[in-house]
Length: 141
Image (cartoon, rainbow, N blue to C red; front, side, top):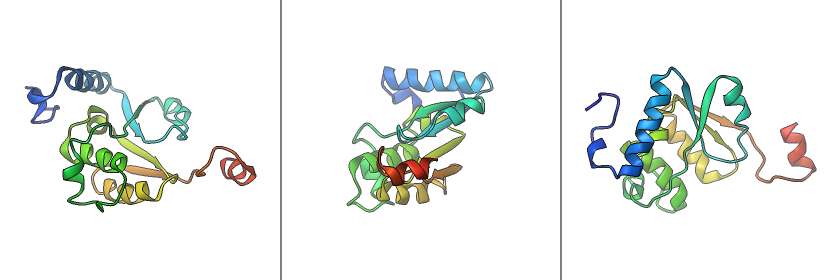
């Protein structure tokens, strides 16, 4: 097995294995990969830097029990799933990301970002919690 894949790679479903191989292919071709959590994050910045932005929100309950060993149990399942996928190496986009970019749209995510910064390079963008409004527009500006 390739040394750049997680130890448990052989046990993954075909779809997850294909995701790992596609992400690995991007990395093998010399591209940087940036994991993003929110659709508010301006992926144009990553593209302008020659990197490939990838969405990294958790989508399964599978890693939540592992996340709860570190994160408070009262955080939402999306946050715990996302963090759990990082610490269990079960998401190709987290696994191969050179940088994670988070945003300040949720207090629970801020706690997760604090923990993620111990594992991967992390940048947290100060973004508004809403898509419209005068104050939100000024913050974007």
